[in-house]
Amino acid sequence: MAETFAAIAGIMVYISLDELLPAAEKYGEHHLAIRGLVFGMIVMAVSLIVLN
Image (cartoon, rainbow, N blue to C red; front, side, top):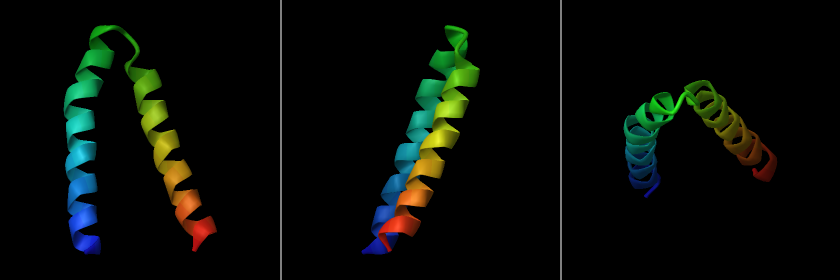
Protein backbone atom coordinates (compact mmCIF):
# COMPACT_ATOMS: atom_id res chain seq x y z
CA MET A 1 0.00 0.00 0.00
CA ALA A 2 2.79 2.45 0.88
CA GLU A 3 4.48 1.73 -2.44
CA THR A 4 1.33 2.78 -4.27
CA PHE A 5 1.15 6.05 -2.35
CA ALA A 6 4.83 6.69 -3.05
CA ALA A 7 4.34 6.08 -6.78
CA ILE A 8 1.32 8.39 -6.91
CA ALA A 9 3.18 11.08 -4.97
CA GLY A 10 6.09 10.81 -7.40
CA ILE A 11 3.77 11.21 -10.36
CA MET A 12 2.15 14.27 -8.78
CA VAL A 13 5.54 15.87 -8.10
CA TYR A 14 6.63 15.18 -11.69
CA ILE A 15 3.47 16.73 -13.12
CA SER A 16 3.84 19.75 -10.85
CA LEU A 17 7.44 20.31 -11.88
CA ASP A 18 6.77 19.61 -15.54
CA GLU A 19 3.77 21.92 -15.81
CA LEU A 20 4.10 24.60 -13.15
CA LEU A 21 7.79 25.47 -13.27
CA PRO A 22 7.81 26.35 -16.99
CA ALA A 23 4.74 28.52 -16.43
CA ALA A 24 6.44 30.21 -13.46
CA GLU A 25 9.55 30.83 -15.55
CA LYS A 26 7.41 32.33 -18.31
CA TYR A 27 6.01 34.88 -15.88
CA GLY A 28 9.35 35.52 -14.16
CA GLU A 29 8.58 33.94 -10.79
CA HIS A 30 10.52 30.69 -11.10
CA HIS A 31 12.75 31.39 -8.06
CA LEU A 32 9.67 31.88 -5.91
CA ALA A 33 8.21 28.62 -7.22
CA ILE A 34 11.39 26.71 -6.38
CA ARG A 35 11.47 28.20 -2.87
CA GLY A 36 7.84 27.21 -2.36
CA LEU A 37 8.58 23.68 -3.53
CA VAL A 38 11.53 23.30 -1.16
CA PHE A 39 9.58 24.84 1.73
CA GLY A 40 6.68 22.47 1.09
CA MET A 41 9.01 19.48 1.15
CA ILE A 42 10.51 20.67 4.44
CA VAL A 43 7.04 21.11 5.97
CA MET A 44 6.04 17.61 4.88
CA ALA A 45 9.24 16.08 6.27
CA VAL A 46 8.87 17.85 9.61
CA SER A 47 5.23 16.88 9.89
CA LEU A 48 6.08 13.22 9.23
CA ILE A 49 8.74 13.32 11.96
CA VAL A 50 6.50 15.11 14.47
CA LEU A 51 3.44 12.94 13.88
CA ASN A 52 5.31 9.65 14.21
